[in-house]
Length: 400
Image (cartoon, rainbow, N blue to C red; front, side, top):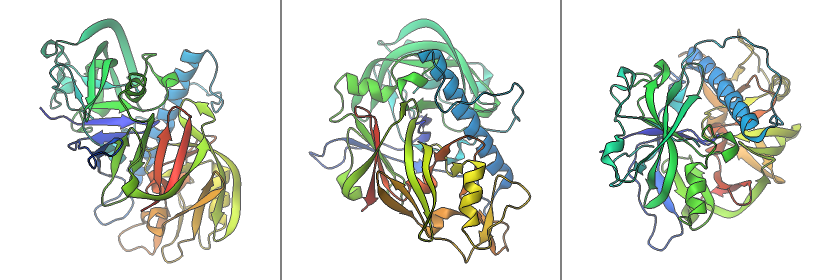
């Protein structure tokens, strides 16, 4: 049976739906082709402002939820965490529309092909899981019921709860034996099939963010000696986006990797040396999280205002979270990591037009309502990115 799932890096959310394949006979590592959908723009290429606002709110909720898990697991607040007032968040749908998809399987024999905590709907789930393909523990001889409940909130109205299990999780021939994951007995509205077509979710951040307080799937693969290298890599550029497990795909990049050291093993957070606009350095020493689950680039309000002040004709329209500028006046922009500047293509800096006939474009760098930057695929599709678990660093290389 074939299933779909979202994975998160954060982390890395991506949908899992394609058929996995081994790259080149003798190549080190395994590739999973990726596919993507986006609902942040309308059919006429204008920005869907409501979806964009939802994406901002959901990214914030996702990051803050991870901070809470970090403090529970380590006993100390996350360095990026800020004291938050109590109160409700708007009930906007979580923006899974920018996530990426591939395939995994679970059980003996493998029967669940889904997309760190790993969550999937179980055969005992209520009507909220209707339309999803369900994991049936009874069909696997290797499943173990752990007897621990879980509750995971992915955003504003995207909650799953149920029981923790363990089973063998296989990704393109690489098997994580006795991997802990959650089998959901209920999906909230935001995870039901009409809003969320994938069946489940899988994360690829560090164990300190785990609700289960267990190793995420990739770290288990590394610990059990399943990978050639303790590294996974992403290419988000057309026409061949893919996730590569156990190394990097040499056909997709040129030159050497430039590394930025992870500053805290929770999210993949690194320091960005500077931001350059039209040849001028406008920002330096920027705290950032590399997040494949965000389509856009989220910055602090002050930093984003400074960035757009360097672009002729840029202004914030009705909503201070977003900026527009003349579509004919796209700036030259680069981000610097590890002392090397990586340029961002013009079409990555433009998220969409203000409307179908507008000469103004919305910028892909937005105000993220967090005290640090979240670097999404608007930047990452301009580079080949590798995540080195053993050395806790993120590497960038030039696309082939």
